[in-house]
Amino acid sequence: MNTTLAALGSLGSMGGLFSATVLYSIGSGVAVGGGLALLLVAVRGLPAKPDHEKQKAAERASELIRFAGQRGSLAAIVGLVVLLLTRWAVAGIAAGVLVFFWDRLFGGAGEERAAMRRVEALASWTESLRDTIAGAVGLEQAIPASARAAAPVLRPHLDALVDRLRARTPLPEALQHLADEIDDASADIIVAALILNARLRGPGLRQVLGALAKSAREEVDMRQRVMAQRASTRRSVQIVIAVSVAFVLGLSIFNREFVEPYGSPLGQVVLAGVCALFALGFWWLRKLSAIETPERFLVRDEASIQFVRPRTPAQQSLQPEEGVRR
Image (cartoon, rainbow, N blue to C red; front, side, top):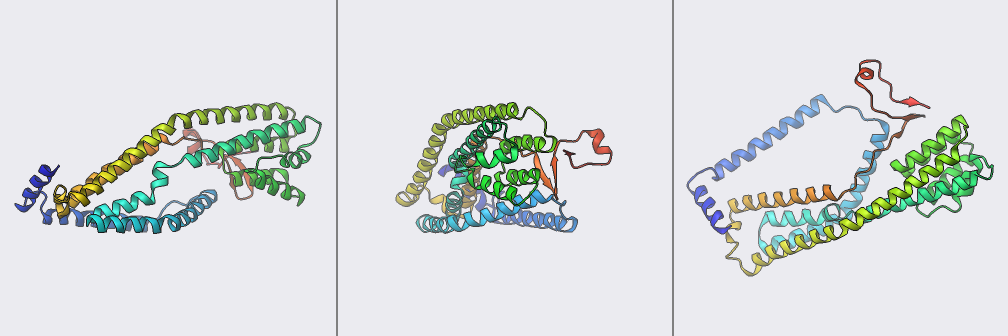
């Protein structure tokens, strides 16, 4: 690597491709192109988003603000320490970014466990609701009775549902609020079955709830197997990253001459490229370790409840409808 940096440095000193003038020109071109792209977006505007997508965007923004408050200070401190030890601006920035996004890149186990607990709680509540309905009890009476024995992760949402029912809120609308609060595709399937029964009052709800509970149990088992297989891989990746970062910092502190070419402007550019490749690899590993879950299909459009389904090309050519009303 030192030989490569020395060769590139010689090219830069001779006014070659990696000269400061060429690099400044490339940076200026990128800046101008990005500014023009932002200007076009500002002039044309962005398509309007549905209300439920706006709500999700606001929740993500508030979550990002809380996350930045917790991680921002630590990332700034680590970046400043690395900058003082190595005297490399790129290394300081890369260390700060790595600390800031550590949980997002190499974590995720806590979120997966929380999702599994939520799905398992949904399965238990569905079974309890099915058994309560078996005693010839109506859905309006079965929901408060089953909410008392619900898991802690679902208890606040079910208590809010019971409060809405006591306030004379129609059952389909109260169930829609429940689906919005839980915000899970598995919950949408269960709530959709309850909404259909509340509107149509047809038979067979016990059988449907039993099948949905069994499906939720199978989903929990599948996620547990996947997490067990990925735990060792995730730990190996974290060890490799920690050793790589410690090795680079150790060389920059205890063997400064070996990494001296990185201190030049051209060396910083090369180091930025190496950090970008590492970041791309981290992002790819994160995508591979993430469990893809289906999107929610039970969404709210003003006061109505809709089951959103993809339109066919023939339907898109006609008057568009937002969904199939139940």
